[in-house]
Image (cartoon, rainbow, N blue to C red):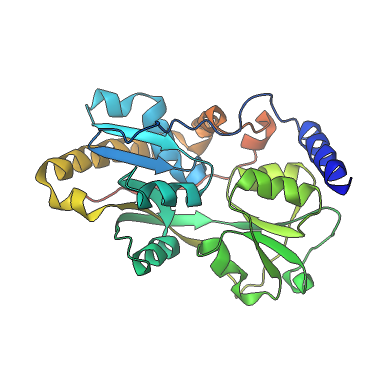
Amino acid sequence: MRKIIVFVFSVFVLISCGRKEKPTVVGIEKEQVASNLLRLSYVPVVESLPIVVADANGMFGAADVDIDIAVKKSMMECDELFTKGRSNMFYTDVIRARHLSSKGVDNKMIHTFEVRYSLIGCRQARLNNISQLTDKMMGMTRYSVSDSLCGSTSAFRIQVNDPLIRMNMLNSHEIDAAWFVEPWQSWAISCGGNEIRLPESMTATGKGAIAVAPKILNDKKSREELNKFVKVYNQAVDSIEKNGVGQYIRLLDRYIACPDSVYSRVKPRHFSHIKPL
């Protein structure tokens, strides 16, 4: 009975936040391994906006980049595709990439960038300061930047990889707080959550990464294709830097069913080029 009540409440919260009636994430993973030289998986968030822009505007096709792109719900799903050989490029963070390497899954980071996290508390818990998290439950992804950010707290770490499930659990008070990147951060706040203040000594940023299988770099043809990808990626970065994040942020609406008002809350940020390989 309790599970039914929690489910109904979660649905109500999503409706009250203005969620649109469409899939939250549209995966385009094929049944079998694609034959493309480059097979990239990523999670649609602000930090992956250059890929979203390039893909949505047909820039990879125009540059004749031999690439297949899979949109996934979580970094864990990207890890799984890469580990099983169904992708040879993936978005991750530095901590996860190193963890995979320690488990024998070789990968080479070709680009790193800043990832901004926010710790959002559920409205029922009324948490304002990180010192209030003692014995509270905090949503995160294990072996990741969000996991490392929990290091200075005494909260219980609850692994919830899918950000939508994490937000639903936060809204229904199944967890007390959770780490989010944009646009999930703004969405969680619009649903009644509040950003928890962090001490000056504690940073809420980490390093994201684009990693590839080493064999791409060792194969001449694949490496040439990878440099074509890099060129298109950098062109997308130039467009974002010229026109601003606000010009492109709603492209995420293809994959995340945020209310329109959420996107206007997302703060500007800068992106950097990938160096030729």
